[in-house]
Image (cartoon, rainbow, N blue to C red; front, side, top):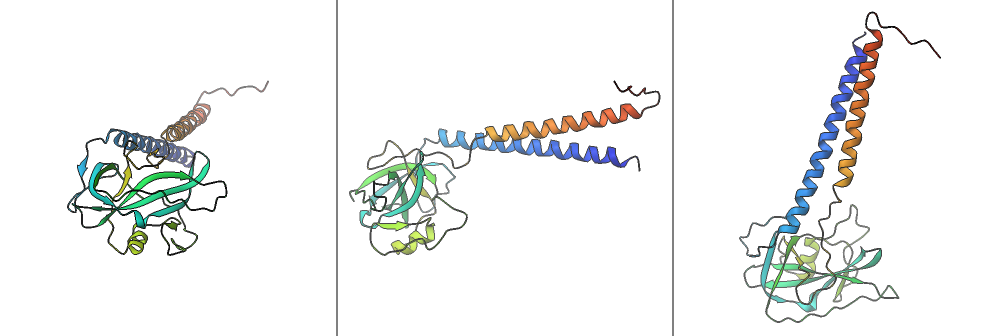
Length: 233
């Protein structure tokens, strides 16, 4: 059974190298995602027939519905609790309402008051990137706990918004550009963490593969004919 240790060593080397390559690929994907997010600046009108991609730059022509705003609670920015303000937008080129994330507002001193960031319903063009609603693994309860407007929400999805607005909602959430009017704090970034940790993990896996190869080589060297074992000091 002398073949078992070398075979196990080779198996571990292959495993460690495969994991290192997987981590490198994840890092490359993250870099590509961040590059796509930063470079998306050619706006296209969002229509019912539009096929959009994540972070694509889009624009919509129409008007806000300021009386049906949804305020998403428990959103953290720079260590502070606050809200995302989601305002429905009726487009002249899309049959469904468009959920526009106008940005973030900090909680007030009491922490209980719900903000009502007004916006006019005048005809306008809004610009932003294709995004989504904030998500959580397990929602602690229903999305809405009251029927008033603006309506406090806890991790709603698009179906929840459609039910609250009683109209179909487009699958694209528009993340309002920082330069657009009637917006709040908007520091949009891709939700994925940076690629640095993946490079670090890849280095660790490759280092383990190299260490395993060194151990295998040392064991083979010691057992070869004519090898003289070291005398203990």
